[in-house]
Image (cartoon, rainbow, N blue to C red; front, side, top):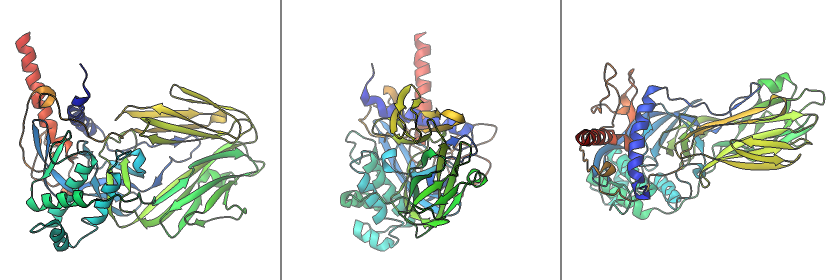
Length: 483
């Protein structure tokens, strides 16, 4: 019998399995691609998770299981320069070092539809490292003393509670800090948290794809940014085909700012084709922005920005043109509310375009826009091609990461009722050792690792790998006894 109350247990098992899968291959994302040499669609910060910077100990309990994990502040390297400090926002999802992340909207993350999303943003805006006066923070929380490590641990515990965990075990993973000061800070932050609005993207182009006829100015593509200025560069295909980037008056543009409307000026005599532009800016990623795992290997705990250095961010926009017929421009966004990926196509031509995405079909008239939602299961890698006339093709890929680790405690206690309980060292679980042997090792902070081994950060969930193994052994022993 299937029971919704058993979802957290399956999530723990899935997290353990995902940990093994991640070790097998490199942490890289394929993103989206467009035929004809146009780069993958991106917007804002792209960053790589380096590891934990400051952390303390925390305890996660689900039913009869208990696991000590490291909880704290992560550090990420921005792709084109810069550093981010982040916290995880999903208690039971594994987090892999060197995983790639992309800045995005909360509605395409585990925070979608959460009544506490604004409160989590408030926490990162009013705690460490944004508030670095640890004496004042300790006094406000009623704690005797806070260090960078215990302040980071208390902040992470507060975020996990708001994101789906609890302190009292009321139908959710129970999360507590091991240090008394960190626990008081977590209580204080949860108690004081108010809803804060989602901050503006560091850099985005809207829409990220346009289409139309040759000889026209195609767009507009609007710049959205918190940076004072943005550089705009046409891609190689645009330059080769004489496509210029202009404003609404047809004036050539090399720079822009928030609200600037960009157009692709396509010559009359050019053959049907595609091109792109890239916008770049130097700015700080706003505290409270969300980053999710990028590409088909994006199974990594979503992060929320808690601090940023000056960083280089980039966004791309593409254009498709032809003299006649259907001229599609496709873009995609993960729709957590509907459990899938929205594929939107603008048809800038004079003939209908028959959109086919997965098993979804829709005819879009010339000059019209249409959207289909392709269902995707949680944690499922997807690859959705959209093709059109004259060799046009977009391929959207990723992993749907929408469900936060909420839910009731498991029936019977333990993994699938096995009642397994474990206690272990408070270091992050790592996968390493020699000769291919996997061990749950302690003693090395992930922020300090840099060897040939591939570390996995327990963020929370990977601490339960041992539980899954114990449960499997118990199940096999039962099976042998019944044979």
